[in-house]
Length: 279
Image (cartoon, rainbow, N blue to C red; front, side, top):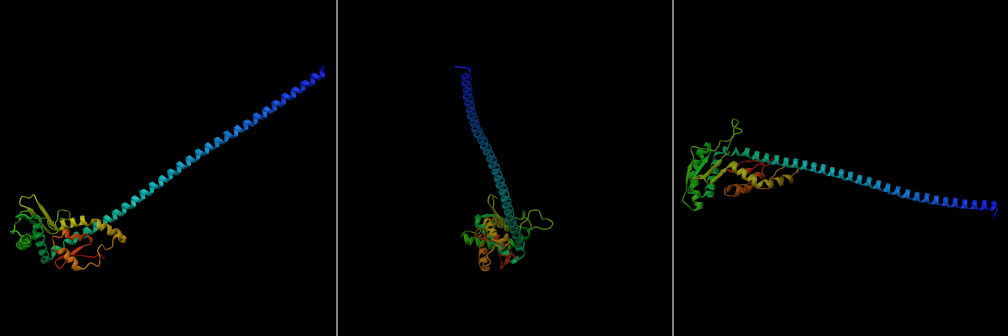
């Protein structure tokens, strides 16, 4: 083999090796490109996932803040409604308490009321001897009806007339005045107790108003909510005066049948309480 053939063969081997190297380089480039694309896609998806998670977290935070703000506003509104209801109910009680002061102004009617209150108190206590306290201004009225009250109680309870001692040393507080606006006061009525003082039955007008107020409070609030503006009349305007008179005529009816606080005020009518429908 001469030099020319050797050179030719060498050239062929060089071309073959170069071709092999180029093909291997192309394979490496293609593989690297694929790996790069896969890695890039993974990185992009991972970042997208992070962004979505961050967005969802912030969106939940916004929703939570909205719910908290809504709840706070709702609670504030409820508090305002409850405060308005409380103001309406308390104003009703204040008006009723103010009108109670007018009860004792009608002496003839108030005299009969005192008698009924004494009889009711005796029926509740059922004691053979009791101590009676009243306002100093009502002392002469109580003395005038005491005998008839004892007789009526004895007839109803089918017992002997009890011994009723009127306390001349301790009286119930007087009606409120400008000079004693914040001190203890009593709008009228009586308080009876057993001789040993262990059993006390407070039958003053203020105590009865408090009892009826507590008893009828749920109904009053319910009706006040049902009426627009909560300032409407809380009394059925179809109620007749005769039915109202019957309600209050029997002092033994539980808490005067719970009718006082459904009305805005109290006044005297035929010696009995009746309602004043607010204008």
